[in-house]
Image 1 (cartoon, rainbow, N blue to C red):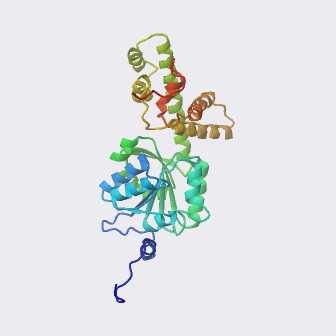
Image 2: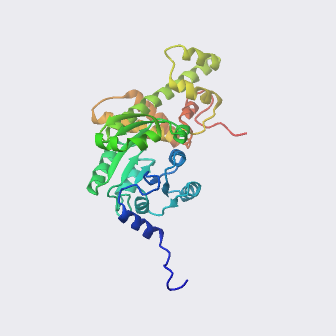
Image 3: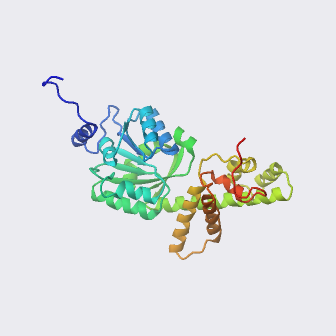
Amino acid sequence: MSENTPAKKTVAEKASATKEASPGKPSTPTGKPRIGFVGVGRMGANMARHLKDLNYSITAIYDVHAPSATAVAGELGATVCSTLGEVTALADVIFTVVSNDAAMKQIFLGKKDSLLNGAAGRVFINCATLTPAIQQSVEAAAKKVKATCIEACMASSISHARTGKLYLMIGADEKVFTANKKILEDISVNLRHIGKIGKAAEVKALVNMVMNINTAGLAEGLGLAKALGHDLKMVCEVFSQTGANSRVLETDAEDMINREHDCWFSAEHAAKDSGIAGGLAKKKHLSLPLNKATQKQYAKMVKLGIGQLDKSGIAEMTFPGRKGSPKKKK
């Protein structure tokens, strides 16, 4: 290299230069914001793929599981970030899809590395099912550094993330929601603005509480039907035409019968989300015995080492002869 040839800038230096040139403003040829993702499991990765299909520039990827980040970044032409601050520097809008409150606290409120480092003007769209309290704490911290948070609770599956047909429950100030409505519409088939930050988390906890109760109830009903010697396909048909019908009957009954529990929504997450609902009820001095019993069943699955089964795996706890163990692979 000759002394007149400028040295190549590091990723961090490039990011810093970009940020200083246009803090918080789209800097892509399309005029669309640069997109970063923190958490590229099956939901996060498929959301990123869909946005890439819509000509958004996916510029930054971070995941605690480094091989996942490397694979998705390579596929989408993004930078694999080794720090959270680097994600913020490289993106205008950052989606987070993390596992629980502790992970959310770590990425936003960590003492050294944090998404809020240099975050002025940035928009954070937080998609995980978490407690209202952590969502509100993150929003308060973001406001202090002049960043914006949106709560985008998802009530959909992996396939919907890939095709941009998520059902989203939004928690945000009205002005923030309106300003960012386009990108939210681009990943969803339906949007519902619930209210301010924390309110969407409350409704999402209710959704998952009822879904989990329905799933546990279906597993018990089919388990008893099996014990009584009934044809389970016949029972499902009867259920579908009566008050026993439910969305869960459509999605989970066959998997329960066939012991096919490929994970779309894990038992471990079901236990967490039922626990969130239980915590909200406790604060309001309400007794929710069905939710408590359901949460206990899913927590037992985790304890037995089968928490990574789909929520339909709760049938392993109720069908005769199964005794809380997954189907043996042939």
